[in-house]
Length: 192
View 1: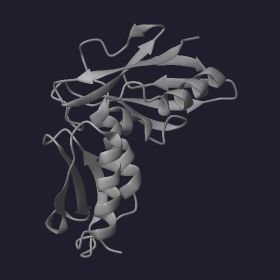
View 2: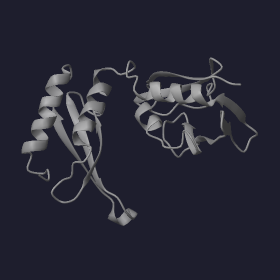
View 3: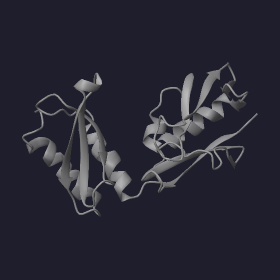
View 4: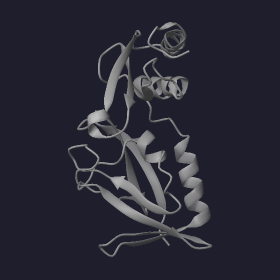
């Protein structure tokens, strides 16, 4: 039986963080792959069944040399397999505990990543007056700015994205959240 754990560290190559997968306390991704950014990694719905994205190319772009495992389960075990003969087996109870704990353990966050998560919670259902839907918040694109991505999905010719920005001091979580709330309530681009 294998043991699963995670180590979340900065990823300068991709200007984010990465979930390093530890199997039996060894870094399973080695130098072959970058881990997936934590919010993206833990939002996947395939931890119990299906294809789970666990690594990305060292360029940092998902879709370029991804590492995917197939997750299956039986009554007592979680099983990771792939086309290369991988067969990792985890105790189901322990596996679920590790996943659930790690989803809500934010000790790895610096101020920028914490503000991104909290601002994302504020804007999660927001839309602009022209029907663009909120995607993500980033404090890593421009200093002292919370950048908000709004987009319209669809065929490539229909895709549209707009980045809106909120000024903040880059240091104070409460200031960023106050300004995000005010922006959502008063900006004329936001649907009320």
